Length: 319
Length: 309
Image 1 (cartoon, chains in turn green, red):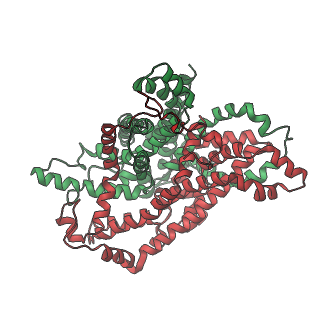
Image 2 (image 1 turned 90 degrees about the vertical axis):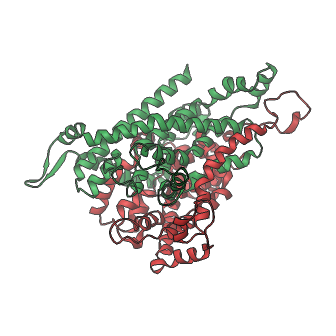
Image 3 (image 1 turned 45 degrees about the vertical axis):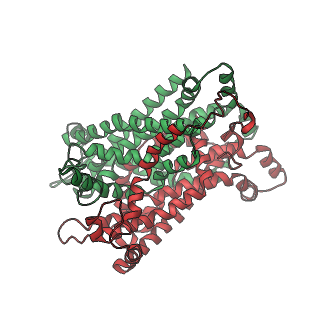
């Protein structure tokens, strides 16, 4: 998720960044006449962007308005695909699942990230640098490798789950069972992104001016008071960013279930998440039109929720 | 992370150095180290390192040992070297081919993404041109669409262009990194003084020449940061090559390893778990090394992202 998700969050803050940059704007683009010169630099990005972003988007919207039938070939059906999708239990089942991930896994992950960031920033740990790097390390590991590793650890052939079960003498730990599968998947996502979010929070904490701490010290503020009065407010913006990242990541949830599917047969169905559903529809069912509809609907839902979160987060900040 | 890599604003104030070292009863800036807290935080370390430790240990085991011995203890025979040579030579050395493919996708995809972002970020920061606001608006708007929503239509589009199952199908979409564009815009705003550009213009240098002889040096730290994030994104790419490629000869490591892993399932199963594990280890080493060496860059990149809120 990294690049795109990060990009979108980055995008969401640009507005405010631009606002903030305005005072220095006279310096930035002073008196310069509007000229076409800027296009020399921006055109290459724009051309590729149109090719790999805009065109597929429009194409998906176009596809979603058609149906391919056995008799009659491809016909225009208006919004029929959307109507079908909104009544499709397979879609909603997957949607509920990613929503669950969003409502439970994301707060846990961000909470852990925040604890780690505050602990590292408190300067009360030995070997701070080691903590920072090691906790961040999983982010550098390719998602596929991370999932394979956890898949092995979860497996009942060898790995941690098997050893624990052997030790207890019963099959108690079954990460691939329907009851546990969401916990197992949530754990993998948490493992991969705790450090990434920790660093986002940590970077925000690092920007707090020293004067504030000095003032707090003179006022006699102690550990937790400093955290509550100075650090947590300073984190607000980055919490919004990290939440937006995570919403997009959750709704796109695909790689984990897709790779673990063979290991968790029966538990991870082909419509386990909306994205997996869209993939299965397109590449196993050849239902490209319906698949495009799933993609568009998920895109709209994600954009709306990300926008609302950003709006609420921003408003809180202005208060 | 405070270093000169990023302009001052990225990291406005570093905590005071050990000025107030006199025995103060309590200090927010220079508190006492706490062994208890450190030990509590070790839980995080263990969690982060657990699968990696498992991978390291397992890479030294033979396949029978993987099944027969405890996951976090070594096997009966130490077969790391056998595993490595086995991984590299399995199926006529396809692993090396995948490794090369990954390098190719990283070089062209991440490299191209960095160049396009650097140019466009600079252009947006330092030029006022017709359509600039629309440019911003379109990119910001389109970014809200999850990348994977585009995957299926991109596949259909590329298959009509005859690009699927070629390296281009993986490289071209990797060229766009909106996050990279954003970071470069931030960096260019901060690091390139407009006066300098005006001076160059007065001296009669062309815009392109100014960019390549002056600006690019000022932007260098930003460029490295953007490159780093683009490298990680392409190195770890899974979804895009999964749908675009069917010929194993063009697979990157991620797809290849997963294919080896799924070899254990189904009819005619031929599990090669020891190669999957050793291959995974070999696949993460380069990217982890890059990360460790370029620490200050990704840290300043993330800092830039969070400062600009």
